[in-house]
Amino acid sequence: MLGLKLPTDPYWAKIVESNIEEVLTDHAWCEQKAATNCITIIINNSEKPELVSALLDIAKEEVEHFKMVHDIILERGLTFGRERRDNYVNELAKFMKKGESREKALVDRLLFSAMIEARSCERFKVLSDNVQDEELAKFYYDLMASEAGHYTTFLGFAKKYGEGIDVDKRWKEWLEYEAGVIQNYGKEESIHG
Image (cartoon, rainbow, N blue to C red):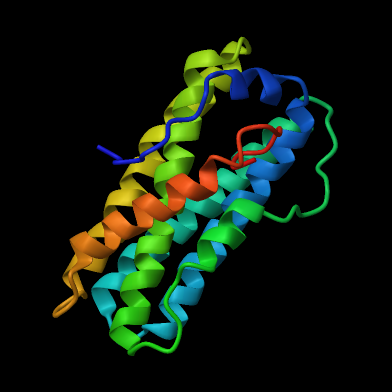
């Protein structure tokens, strides 16, 4: 369904378990950045009411996820650390086309967003299937469905607003590019690391 070219090695879940505090902090900040991404798309495309409504819902859900992860950190007596750089996302951002029309820029931003959601969904599945902590396994299983919904929403809007753009071709290019990027990750206790 997600079309990802390179699956995450389940061993990554063991790396994550070695430092739950770090991955939870990183995860919380990923949720905050996802909400901010939705708001940015809304600001730049406020004339599209259907897009605005859908992304407001996703932004709200991402903030709720941020709170859920933060609550887990506090319940476990862990420390919520400072915001982390997400090198994976920064590398993906380099692939977005610059200097294009507003329509092409929107489509690429939506595909960029879909890509992040797809990989997050896949990573949450790996965690839900492989971490020994039953509470976290269930938590990540529940979030997996939400990320899949976000992925399909972004991809759907890319196709809706991609008139005159070969969105399927561009999505395949994103999948190929992401496969090259992700092969350098999966070695750290972060959601995309």
